[in-house]
Image (cartoon, rainbow, N blue to C red; front, side, top):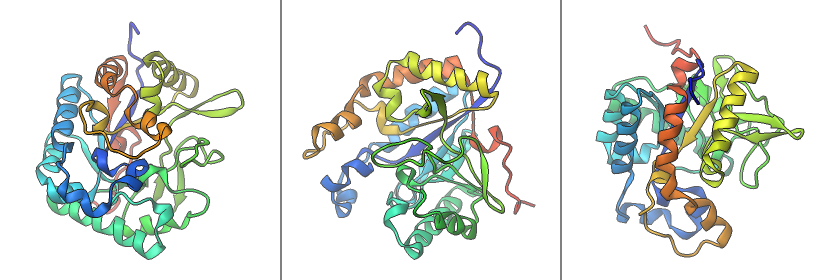
Length: 285
């Protein structure tokens, strides 16, 4: 693209390590996490360097589990001018938790992140976009916990997540709580994913660039892009056990992600969620 679109899009990172990915959960016991060498710190540092080189700001949806063990990662995110947000504590899908357990998870994560960073945490993203039609009560819990916005709904059809009939643009789900859904484009009578993640790795880079540019131009609205630190880490250990489909989804094109990210950062303007969408903490003095 010869000239950047003037719209600033929202760049987001789900801060978790490779062994915490939902699709790999059946093959890595949760009680083994502390014995597995963590790679997230080095990968977040690489992302921070890339973002700084390109003048991009981002929102980092961070696990409380990660923050407890690597508080310096959280502090570096904030020191570099990015937004710190919550990805819950232990990367458990909201759809697999009771209301009480979900409340404990999101409240615990918010407290840990705020205590470490010394800044308010107003945003939340559910692991694997696991707020859907069957657990809309999760929005009530998020409001009760003090969150101001969520980015937990992906309005697409997918075998592990998605609410294809949900609104495609920011909407108020509860008084004082806004949902910022991951970006989709309309084509062939359906919502097609345009917000990053595995789709950014599966398809050629030009597909993502086209989709984000089309969304900006057709809707005159900012897009939301998401990724994970492990997606720029092609040397991560291979987890034994998953089937072909899961292995493909997790490992395909890891060696290309960082160079694609570099192009993405150059082709569009990027900012943090709270500022892109003008969301403020009403509890701030």
